[in-house]
Image (cartoon, protein in one colour):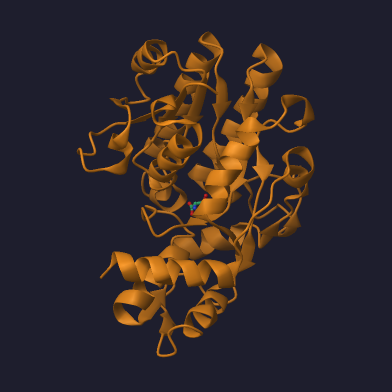
Length: 316
Ligand code: SER
């Protein structure tokens, strides 16, 4: 990985992964890209930045050629709840950008990473200790596009020998960039509510378990997987990874340990609740552990301490 192109660098994980990879591999080794110019103050502009709409394959190829890219990290995607508002647009964007970047990766022999998600599972999947290889019949367009993406990455590996890698991310929690339009977003919003108002109204029902991960663990997981010995990888797309599993009242109780006045109530959104119920309660990450040494450092108590401290500072 000498020259890395990150697409969707303005998104939740994109901007933080850009900064993280620049620290790890060097400022000029990471070319961030997105559909908009984020303005010069944005952290992704601390190094090379290119305007790239991944729906335009020619433009992706041009940038790959220009910078001698050997690794593509494709992150641009529409998330689960937003996807349900305009399924056709979500399908077109998720699949169009995936195929374009895969094709360019094939043409220029790049290593390729794209994330899948807990959303790639559905009501027919075992919900507890969800295995790496199991039934995947998701009911969201986001999930359908993620399963199709996993299959395409397998296909490009088997057919063309493309070095594809990926993880099924759980809900990602971060104090830097808020997520946009996901089902797991409540677990980020709740910390903002706690700091700003000492209260939060959850759109997910009490008792609804989902997998989650603190952003530093997610960033490290991407790099560890990309650095892993290819001979050890039996799965090409995508590994179950998780750091914790909780439901809304558990995260509220954890916050209360630090902000005793914190109060949470519920106003359940039926669309996101139905999505959450169709996803795993907790996934089995053992293949990721065995094949490339996946390990998370943050559990719910440790993440809560860090989130509250960082957000307090940020929202001052
Ligand atoms: N965080 C995503 C969502 O909720 C799941 O991958 O849509």
